[in-house]
Length: 405
Image 1: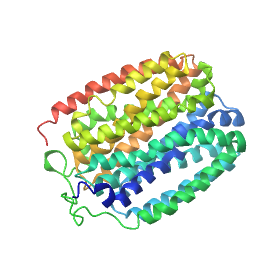
Image 2: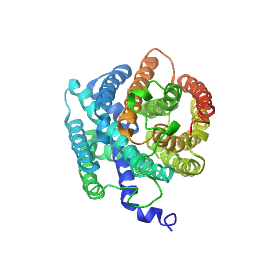
Image 3: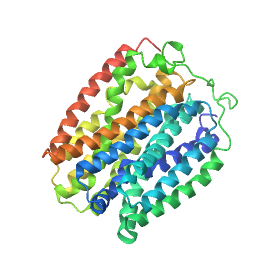
């Protein structure tokens, strides 16, 4: 009965998780990069300078994430989330009114810290803390919010920018953030207690070796250091891909409007990946997915590098979307399953901080390479090779931890 009514009985918390990840859109690279050309032209800066500004804001966000990420373990969901939403709204308003290039790194910091950083972090921490028995499905539904925003926001805001300009579009984003905070406040008014709801799980679920791992212990564990580079491949390369989407369409001579119209392909296959990943994790656990979930990214990058038409771009989006869906379930389930839930916020904040840090290096490095004459096609081919190496590293993790659960 509980199984059949899982989605109905837990609709409040499932929707809260999805709304959290949906709200991250305005701090994600796929959204901010839509305004790259306008910002570079307005401030008269090069690709590498824009990449450096973006990296500075993102690196600052990563540093602060490392310090405050553990707050999710000690504070209730509602006040913490609403505080972040308030800062998010302020950052968006500042982007709509910015006139000094010196403020741009500060604004990027605010958008990245609140959006890609804290709201994404809180969504996964809450999902891991509130659910254990059906964690795969929970993370899949939470990640669904981001998939929907990836499908809707680019096309919508390219259209709005054509009418309102880039400043007007950020003004609309500010209003949307404020509106999203209202249902979020209602949904998070009550936290889920797994034990009291009788879903067959304990409030605190252990990780490897039946233990709750503290942050300092995780940092000394070989699994962390072997899995971390592979877990970072997805956000680094995905961020770089979307960060350069405007320039990518320019060198391919594709209309941006038609290119972003293909993003729903990415969303649909991402949803498929979420469904497949969540079912596999709930039935077979996370380790079985680790060596294979990045393979579609390698295929997608190679196709994108060699695509001559928008049909090729659509196929590229298909494989990248599949990887995104699988990766969202893996990255959400990995930390509670391997290291337990008692210190989940503190442990995951390290990984989230490193992820945000890494996503700063991707666009920065890519921008520098472009200015030095290294084309995106070559960059994407190299990324595909690194992705395959990451799959090999994850195979060792799966084999090496087989007897630890």
